Image (cartoon, rainbow, N blue to C red; front, side, top):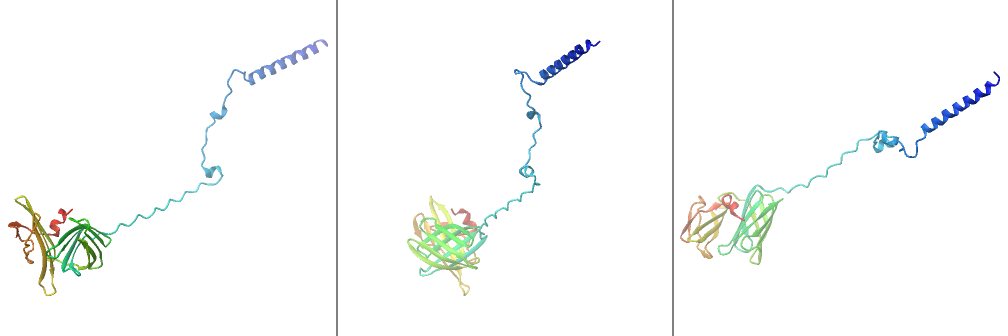
Length: 240
């Protein structure tokens, strides 16, 4: 009995050592087997900067929108007429929704203008001569400014006017020739009317008839042709 004790002890030690060796083989991967990437299997948690810093996220203030530029106001409707200082001529200006037309006339020389009005400023350019200009400011019930025609410059003052005062124009084509005429009608303080105008048949200047202040759009004869004057509301859309 006493001889079996060491043998049993040695056998138990061998079994224990063998078990540890097997455990070591299972725990250690072989050189040819891939290592398991446990980090790739873990869920990724995205945090904002506030959470990463341990502080509660604060809502960002909405940016204050910059104010949009204010568009200059345009005059819906206005008519002006007056005398051009130092020239003996009349000038008439009309505005419809920001579009403006003008006419300068002394009975011999004439100039038509077109342009725009915005924010109380009026800028017009000559139709036949682009060097002709009108610049004016609207001040209450008047237009005041300057004009340049044929290299000469004058100033003018034109208060608001009502029909039949104002600007009139007529055009027609007769036997292949263009006939046109323009008039400015202004009411005087005594109730009578002053008018000035010019008329052309082709390139030839002809006598201009007077228009009736009581019926300024009645037909008239120019160069043997019958033409029909229009007030500014009737022809402003035809102007360039």
